Length: 305
Image 1 (tube, rainbow, N blue to C red):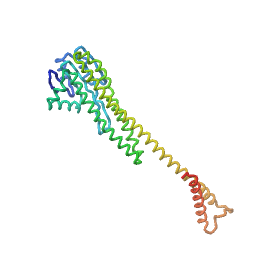
Image 2: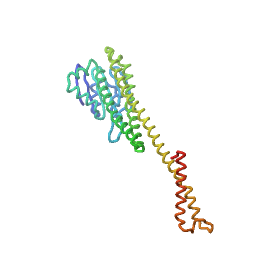
Image 3: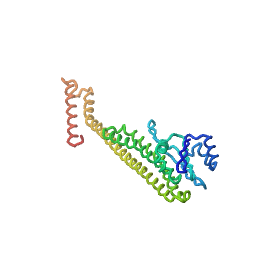
Image 4: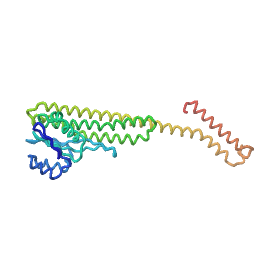
């Protein structure tokens, strides 16, 4: 449990909560038992609940796993009273650690973050979350660039799996970050009710919505780009396949008359005009070659080759 106090406001961060932590919260705060029961285990869905003397919020932070190449939403619970803000999460989170370090190492920033209400603390924590989320998108941009390079280096088949992986990653990121919009929007409406003397908080929460839209628009751009690349890759693969089929078809047409001729000439009958003659082998080879060249010239003049 980590605690930072400034300007009569306190932030408490609880990582990997235990029953001892929830018991401590029950003794020291007037939180409803149902609220505390949702801290262990996690609640599994976003929410904004407004009680008489506190707010309970469930939000998510998108975390990218480089090994598995997947993005997972990690839950962060906020218990907000008028002089305390408590964050509860089951994993170490970079944006929370960054916020804590800034508060501990910079008095000026701590005074700024711990403004006149706990709503200001919530705003600055989620600014870190959104900045972190935007940085998480960098790997998607790099992978898209790599796919684009691969497509135009004739690696279309190798890119099929890569495109599918990126599309899954974008979908996972969407799922992870989508709840934040509903939470920020709801909090913007409820801010004046919970902090009636701080009209500027609605502006802060609206700013969070704007920052969220920026991240969401970036995801949309990546979605459009990867869809366009997938379409291009499919067209190039289709063109290659058609070219191969065309080549084999033409080869079949060129060689079929020759094969038919050779088959007929191999029939051992008394009336066979070539079999049994001197140099009959070379006569057959010459006829076959002549037919192949004739067919090739025909296809060439028709511009099928």
